[in-house]
Length: 193
Image 1 (cartoon, rainbow, N blue to C red):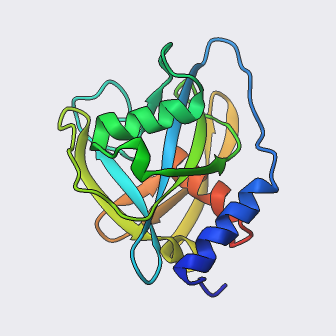
Image 2: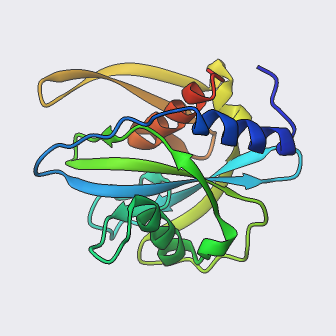
């Protein structure tokens, strides 16, 4: 699929997500988390904005992820969680993010239910990185993930259940697990894969 120009892509994103009803999961004893799926206007196209977690965080050490974390009792809803987390991790103010919509909840083998919140950042501000949580920040064009040559899947067993696990190797980072599943969920919702 040919990538849309940025102004068309944003409207396409808004229209597509407004027509979906994301699947919500309710599983006892799992931690609820919200992540922001940041799409940054890079001029000619949009990029996904990723973080690489430090080796000192409690979970998912060294992995590539979207900004996010466990809900806080002070959060008004899951969007609030995602926007709070992107502020805490990267210093991106809520006013810089246009929250467009939600994707299906995702249950991870590590005990979380993640709700992805898709957000557009038209003008990426200077970042203030929380060095305790974030080792690196980088961007990858959305089109990279649309190209089937850049992804691969394999079957793995978690808790006795066979699951398809996707990964993408950008040459400098490997994006896999929940983050890759969220990317695929968005692109599938957009009918781009």
